[in-house]
Image (cartoon, rainbow, N blue to C red):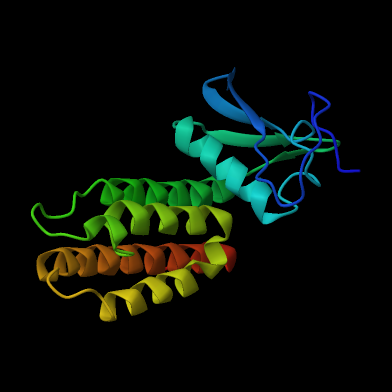
Length: 187
């Protein structure tokens, strides 16, 4: 028998979990609180789904100055940790924006193309929020698909190549930021 959520419904294995999130004022700051007991997961930031849930909450409730994950133990992120998550969320927003580009009109087969912006960049955002550390591998797969792209879509492929280059550069900057702050490197 599986775990139960707050509504006494059985949670299926591997099903995405979502923590309830609420904004609250803490003095002058705006805090985002996650209810980690309600989702049925192992606890604050104990697995990739928890991190994804936190990133999704931050993406939908922008402007939070702090993040508190409440479970059996309360976990609050410091400003450096918040900045890392905010940068991941910003890259996710950029991917959302890139997903809005419409394919060129008049070309057949766009709806089956694996490089269709909505499909490609929505998938990349999901991968980023699921496991930001493995995102570079997902990006390499997307670049490989681009090399093997369909004929007759040169304009679309060119724009997608530019968008993937932008995404790659943004991700590399995110990694450099994490390394600088993780090792307290001052440049």
